[in-house]
Length: 277
Image 1 (cartoon, one colour):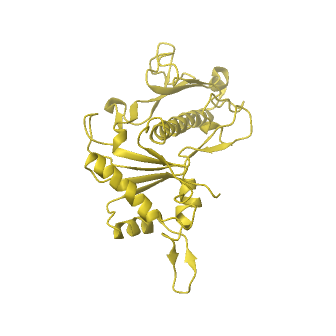
Image 2 (cartoon, one colour; image 1 turned 30 degrees about the vertical axis):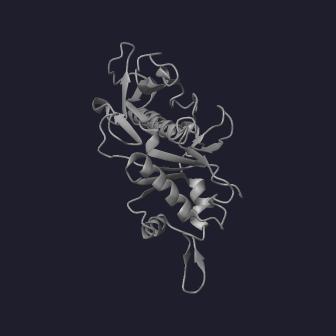
Image 3 (cartoon, rainbow, N blue to C red; image 1 turned 60 degrees about the vertical axis):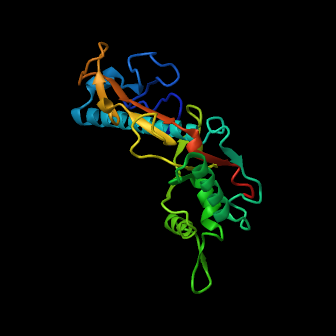
């Protein structure tokens, strides 16, 4: 039901599965996990009375739930920065109805090309990616005449990401990576019916990323700096002394990264991109 992708604390079922989660996001240093992580507790009495197979299943489920939460929230952290008119202050344009992507008479190729060259003229680097929420693609660009495919029998087929990139390349806008984010999270309160919210929202982001950037001195729109000693997501059972304990009912899951917009001027954010739907 999406409980494991909700953005607040969580209670699952009463059958011995993880039923307690402590968050470390808003209060750094509030407990042992110093970076991003969760603690889940499986009721100890139930855990000790289970067979090995059932115990292993509950522990696997607890680790999977924590991992899903961490990865979902890492994506939310990135999207909340990249698609933020505050972070992108001075580098944001709210589209008027003449240029909104669900307006079939708008000239999207020229509009997108203009903002690509806006970034190029600002930083001396041609943007190499366009990112947007799934709803922007589905309700706008995929069915826009600039990118639709007209078949020999006269029928029209919705655009594909590959066709979008090819058409942009035909207009001297080459080397673009198209990123369509369609992830969601459960924004409902605990115990309520799941309510899914888009992580990426109704934005288009044009920018230049340097995949080889290693420090904040490198010219790149964004970068996820990862502590290599904790690459990825790691889970372990632990006791009160914060040491590994395979028999403990407490599962600790953590990851370590810094996901941030390094140079906002290396990008341009388009807001108010949908208007007719």
